[in-house]
Length: 323
Image (tube, rainbow, N blue to C red; front, side, top):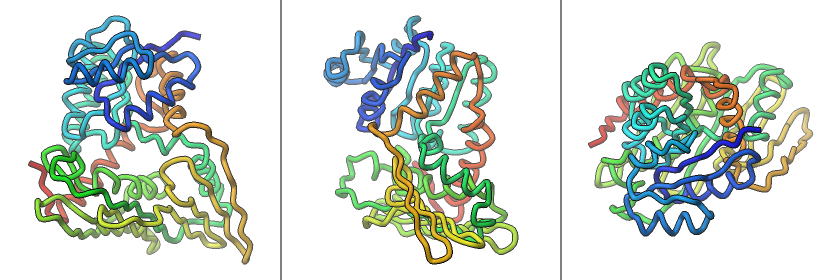
């Protein structure tokens, strides 16, 4: 098996989790990391026994020994850093949201095609065993067709204007950071909606605090979605069907359990996972790279475009403009 040499650009919390899980992936090696802060890069490299720690992203993108780059920088930088790597023929796994808007996403996809280089949005939830199980139950219509979806994601971080989460210029706020997960739950099961109705509340600095979204589908099917940075919520995804309910339990976006409810009976299915869960998308990406694929058949360009198009529409409706 060909070993895939990975580089990581942006060394925050999510990059740490990704690196920890990468250690469990056979045929993968974390070869280099990059931060604008050399001390931070050195510390990260030492922690994960990485050979090279760069103090600039361009050097990592130019390293001839790197096969794939995981981009974990703030949302507003995803496009620039993806293009930089794609132009160097480095396969790119870019954190979600893919970019700031559909125009940026289209530019990234065009670059991947022009450079004949693999690109994928890192929507890790799609690849987790519990989510794949739920999708299979819904696809088989175990309890009939979906009649309604309820999904939410909420937590209350310390309000800090210096934090990326609260910076408009970096795409901060609940919608792009966590609202993308409930929207993903709807689009991955019902597809793109016919109509979107949304409203929001805002912090004093103009960053969206909470979003309340209804996606409307044919036959009066609706997805009721919520994201918030003002309170901790159940963070579940519930799919009501004609003859029962499929509920992905708390923190549905990460390794979780699935409860099947029908006829007054409940059965909860558990899925063994000894990692944060980022290794599943990484294995998929490595397989694509080894077979010289240019696009994921699961997290497709078309799906990423639909996801971002829906986010753009919501932003327009709630009057959210990034600086």
